[in-house]
Amino acid sequence: MSWAEAVVPHFKALHVGFLALWMAGLFALPTMLARHDGGLLHAEFTQIRRATHYAYVWAVTPAAVLTIASGATLIFLREIFTVWLFGKLVLVAGLVALHAWIGHTIIAVAETDGRHQPPQALVPALVLLLLVIGVLTLVLAKPELEELPIPALLMEPLGRQLPFDVPNR
Image (cartoon, rainbow, N blue to C red; front, side):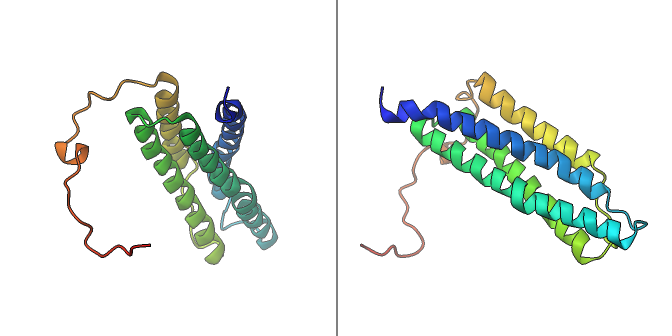
């Protein structure tokens, strides 16, 4: 057994743990944002705003970065370069976009002092649920997607040069 095979279970455990924390945070933050109500007292609004900000900055974002880093490490340790993996990466990009949108909403709520109305928690939760189900389907089922019709333009090199000079080193 090589050292790479020996560390794979440890990286998988880290990946799943960080993923669970990231997804829990992405479910919780929209609910916390929905509590930002203009009718709250200033002290209550400040408390909720700080809680969402600190949760996003100190828990959810580091979990996202560590999830992606451990997943990328697993890709190279296991040398998995299949079509289902690229589909999964597209869905992960959707998770990252949702993460960034939630962060933007947290900032908008904080900077407008209650004038920005965050969306109801149901909409981001449904988007997150669809993305998570898609990722889990691809990871657990590992469907044969090689038969998908992909344009030939994407399947073979065109032999063209880059539109700029690449320095020689």
